[in-house]
Image 1 (cartoon, rainbow, N blue to C red):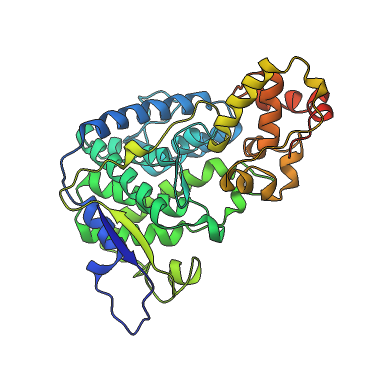
Image 2: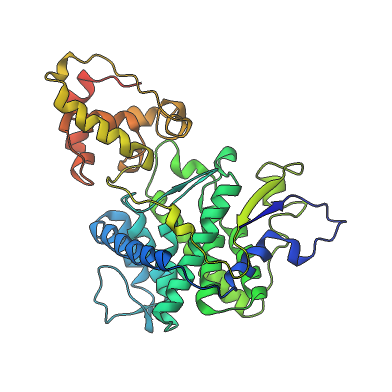
Amino acid sequence: MISHKVKVYPSKIYLPKKKQLAWKIANIANDNAKLNKKAVEMVINRIIDNASVAIASLNRKAVISSREMALKHPRKNGATLFGINSKLRFDCEWAAWSNGTAVRELDFHDTFLAADYSHPGDNIPPLIAVGQQMKKSGFDLLRGIITAYEVQVNLTKGICLHKHKIDHIAHLGPSVAAGLGAMLKLNTEIIYQAIQQTLHTTISTRQSRKGEISSWKAFAPAHAGKLAIEAVDRAMRGENSPSPIYEGEDSVISRILDGKKRVYHVPLPNIGESKKAILETYTKEYSAEYQSQALIDIAKKLNKKIPNLNLIKKIDIYTSHHTHYVIGTGANDPQKMDPNASRETLDHSIMYIFAVALEDADWHHIKSYTKQRANRKKYHKNLEIN
C-alpha cells in the first residue's frame, strides 16, 4: 500500500493530474491486478447478503416508491429490479436507484468504520445494473466490485467527513465511479473525470441522518450510485469535470472539509497489487445501526440474568465516541427518545434499541420497530436509559 498525501493547492500552482487523488484512484481502477481469491469469495457473500436484505424490504414504502419510479423507465436488454419479473428490464441508472434503495432500507447490510463511516455494499447495486445492461461477464463484475470496495474503504480510512457533518455518500460516489471504470475497462482519463464529477454532485449534509430521520437515508446511497452512472456516461462521451476536485483552491477539502492547511493521507494499493479491502468490512446480525449490534447482544443476555425488569429505574451505558454522538444522547436529538419517531430514527437510537432488546430478549427487523411495540407502556414507563 502507498499512503498518498492530499492537500489544497492555490490556483496559481498547477497540480499535474498524476499528482491528484482522483487520478491516483482512477489509475488503481484501471489497473488489471490479479484478483485475490478470498476477496472474490467475499464479493459473492456480499452479493448474497445484499439480495437477502433487499428482498426483506420489498414491501416497505420507500422501496415501493423507488420501484414505481424505475418502472417508468423500461429498456430492452437493460437491468432487472428486485421484486419484478426478471424478464422485464429497465434503464440501468433507474435499476440502480430502486435496487440500491431496497438494499439500504433496513440498515441491514455491511459496514466499515475508520476515520469515517460507510456501507460499502451500496456499491453493488449500481455495478450489477450497469453490468447487466452492458452484458459484462461475472469476472468483470467481480473486478468492479472489488475495486469499488477498495476505493471506499481507503477513502473512509483517510478522510473524515462526519467531523464536518457531510454525509458518507461523498466517498460512495467516487468508489462507484471507480468500480464502474474497472468493470467497463475504461481508461484512466475517463475514470478520473467520472470520479471528479461524481464527488462534485454527491456532497450533502448529515441532516439526512439527524433529528427526524426520513426515508432519504435509504434513498441517499442509491442516488449516489445513480449519479455515478450518469457521470461515467458523460465522461465516456468526452465531457470533463471540476478539477482538481480534492486539492483545488475552492475544492471539497478547502471549502467543506478541514481547509487549506490540512494534509490528509489516503492509502491505496500499488499498481499490480491485489485489492483486498473488502476483507476488512463486516456484516450485521441485526437490522440496526452497526454500533448497536453488541449492545443488543448485551441486552438479550441481561434479560436472562435480571428476574424482574420492573426493578430497574435507570441504566447508564458507557460506550464509544461514535456510539455516543451518532446513536446516543450525544447526538442531542430529542427524537431519539420519542417512541413515535420514524423507524429510521429509532434504528439510530441506542436508548430505544437497548430498551426493546432488554425487554424482549430478541431483535427483529420489522417487529422491533412497529408503532405498537414502540408505544408499549412498559417500555417508556420502566426504563430510563442515558
